[in-house]
Image (tube, rainbow, N blue to C red; front, top):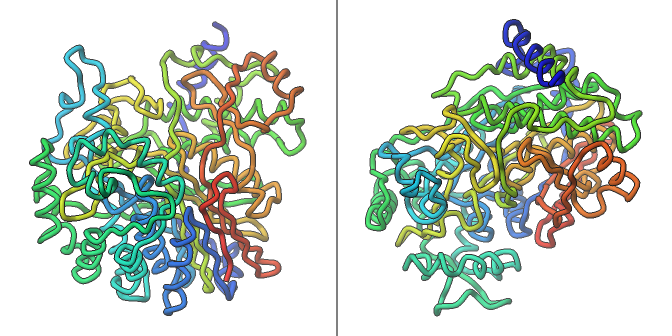
Length: 571
């Protein structure tokens, strides 16, 4: 009870008075002048699929920059990795433009259609209806990825959009051999795929998943990408493609309209920046919850020198910081165009100092002492890629269709697999979504609103090295990126950062998920005696990292060794 009272007093105190920490990113000449003049002279790309990584290099060889390469990687992933991302979903990007030394966050997150009705996602007893939230056309928000790629080409790229899309179009037309993850995803979702004729046509040729080693083609999506490359936004959000999308959705019981598509807009936002141990972390603002949580965790940890602690006490402090950040995630965050959030408070070092005082040195804080709630096991879908080009442009993009193979609904004649991002809203306040995350009315669905996301594409600039980092993984994205940043600050190379063993706590459930091998027996025993409940789970995530050592002007790229199909490459 004393701990709960102290938490309450600290929270009120820092609600009443905090200093601002969330502002437009402004270059500091004294800090960045040397970086502005320096160029790597070569490029690094790390993505979840070798074909996508090679597509990025192909576009660089044509005279493109990192932003053109990002279009090639993202569009190719839409073809070869549809279980995780694609043109029917959205993305979030944190980028650094070398010529102007400027950092930008690009929000191409999906939006709710105008006719959204929370009742569509409830059972008769008022409980969440997971089927309508996750499967079929009602599960899908208005896609943002096509508009985001057009935006990148128009505002930051050097090549015509059609040239950057060319590798994906060729791959879709000529075909490719699906990897084991895609084949496994199709088999996992086969019964849902069979509910929708166009989905069956795409993913179950001849009524069965593609055989291992079989060439698989996607001519409908190739045509959709050609229209996008030729007409830009109008090639997807109006005209032929839009008509096909809306017709397919409405015939299957969805509520999209042509106006929903025509109204979609990409948003540029100021990234969140936080300083930690001499490193500048540039990361995602709302409607991502990731950057706020990462900044809050790092602000809490900044009061300790965790580099000098034994593993048990270091892990203890990181878990407690995670617990408090996810508590705030659930209560406050949503679409900034719809919700007023206390970001100045959440990102304030003074607020972090107050939270730090509630951490006991040798004992876990039960989450029930902070507030009651419940949750579930987080999922492992979405994709991330990182790029640094020869001029020093940096791109961190996390893209998603949400759960495995999104809604499993393909719009006839388009090849576009639609997302199931409506589940990322708090469809029922304080009830967990598929990833176990809770939400309040701040993340309730409204027409045109963007659902909260855990995507955390990030850039880390240190005294001598720069990293571009991110990962898929549902709610674990936040903690994966956090732990990757800490591993980079501790001196790890790209492989070390991507391979770093992971643990995760998200406030509720009050359980620490631990990757096998992360802790030795003594650490596990000590944490258990401190009051933690540890639950081992299979490896998760698919981190892709590129690091620039500015002392040697060398690049280092790595894809997560937990998965066999990614490729991190320097050329």
